[in-house]
Image 1 (cartoon, rainbow, N blue to C red):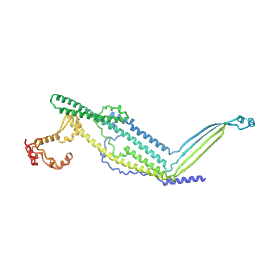
Image 2 (cartoon, rainbow, N blue to C red):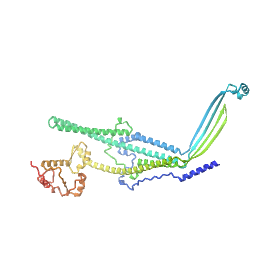
Image 3 (cartoon, rainbow, N blue to C red):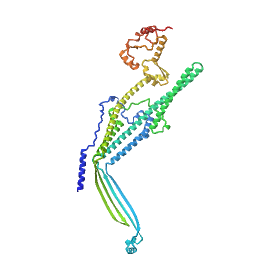
Image 4 (cartoon, rainbow, N blue to C red):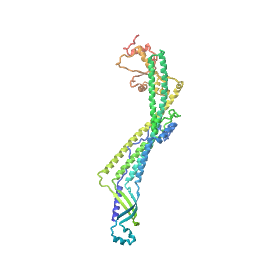
Length: 555
């Protein structure tokens, strides 16, 4: 009775301690989410982003991504780690319940010894059948024993240590699940990125092949004219240099294409040396679908796998911190053992029995030399680090989501401009022109767009550059160039519109030297001819009035 009272008092004291201790850990992010996102208006289009690559309607692209998701090593590694984390979580969850086991043992023995009895005793015992084995010079004995038992043990999780360990393993598995999902998204994105770059490289290779073929014909043509004496060796060398440069550029593009194909092979689990990019019946770059931007920026916390994985990691570290704090509290164990069996000697199995034992134990840390407190501090530091990493990742995501939507908006606008330019330039492409003069003043600002649409085999001539060259040539011919290199120059700009607007826009294209802008109704107010392509005596006299030290040189 006294023994039971002691145990009851121990259990009551442990429950009292459990009521006083709290292993809950507050999780608060220091990042305040914005009430509204600046790019909410850009969130339009298809809301389904699960299989976004299907919107391109390219069977080759869809097949490569499906292959990468099925047999890509990045995905397989992530799934394998997920399976490991789930197994660890299952083991931690199983540790909450009791354990039951069976034990058994069977033995057989044989013994032989010299008979210590004398001959008279042996004769006397021979009269009894039960002692007939004692008549010989040796005494033999055989026996068998067999027993089995049942064991059971359980540690009641009064203070939540095991539950915290199970929660930590469960959150770790959830985080690994998000990482596996993120790996699938990354693999799909990387395959698509390399695929589009490879297709673009294929287009550049086709153009480069045409350019090389054209230059080779030109070289043969110029060499023929050189043999006929119509051109000098300079023209021949210049044509060969252009051909060599085109061949080198073609080789560079070919290397880029091969690198993209090898990357696709690795992502899809194929051997790069034997993998070739299949041809597609669809020109994915010609008809680009709208970006899957139907999801609003506010939902990034629920959609981004990296944020969800980081949040799960924070919860895992919080559970480990709670488990470390629970080490300060007592631990209880309940054990049961039951065993029974029988023993037989020389065929006699009359010895049988059964025994059982039930025990309740308690273990309370008294002195650990600071080990438990040190583990608590380490667990707390890991938790705080995880919280800071989550906040950092959240801030990065907030910046990336606006940048992504802004990029989608810019790409959409760029696509519209390219389509407009394509409509304007399509008649010229159909005509097969090889040279295009940029006659309007703003056309040189669109050189990149025009060159992209017309192709590398069309030569663009800027009227502004050619006009500047002609003016410089005429200035040299007329002796109107400035001979003093160290003199101070003063630039004057004439604008037929508002001078302030022109000054603001001109600085974006011409630089900060655009400071002196004067309004004029027409160019003829300053230059009566209204043209700068021809030098007239009036223009020369005007230049002399601007700088009297300079006078035209007479031939």
